[in-house]
Amino acid sequence: MSDVKKFMFVNRKAPYGTIYALEALEVVLITAAFDQDVSLAFMDDGVYQLKKGQQTKGIETKNFSPAYRALEDYDIEKLYVEKESMEARGLTEADLLVDVTLFSRAEMGALMDEQDVILSF
Amino acid sequence: MLHIINRSPFTDSALESCLNTATGGDILLIEDAVYAATAGSAAADKLRAAMGRFKIYVLMPDIEARGMAGSLIEGVSPVDYGGFVDLTASNKTCQSWL
Image 1 (spheres, each protein chain N blue to C red):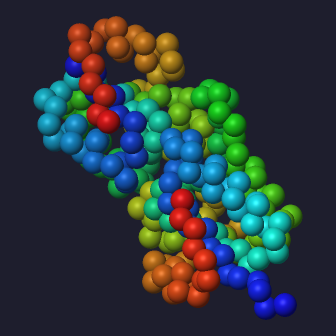
Image 2 (cartoon, chains in turn purple, orange):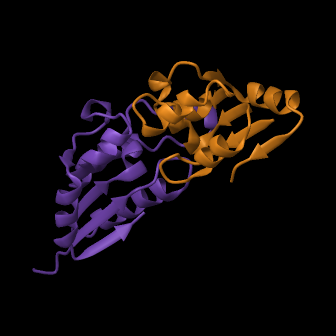
């Protein structure tokens, strides 16, 4: 079957301040059920979604960050994080709660060109 | 005056406009604005430079939710929701930079 498409989800928003990060995660999990080739890109404030140590009790909001660690159980293993966005925020790979591939802005752009479908959050 | 900012310094000019416009007083960073007060963020330097004119507060539940409690820069005062209320009460006026 050649009807597998390359899907990329582009995450550019910080968690909790808006609903985008959580909604993106929901759609990613739905897409996984359809056996598509799924990639996740994290850039700009989206890199904050993967920060370790999120504790949301104080804001009485669901902490959805553990779900990123569960993605590999749904065969979603392509997580790309933009290097420049990390640097501008003082973050390193050790600050992230999952294993990711660090990509430069140029590499991220090239990866976007390879996709059949891009959904932006 | 109390200035309240709730937008990320990376996506919105609210903090920058506040720092460039307001003459002084208290600034409270809440929601996505708390990233401005974290070490290594590009906005932290601007915040540090403004510390002479402003007293900077940050809402701790929002910092903790985002996993940034360990990265808070020096000179910023953490407050809880009770502290938030105290700030609104102790300042004569209050401006939310939406």
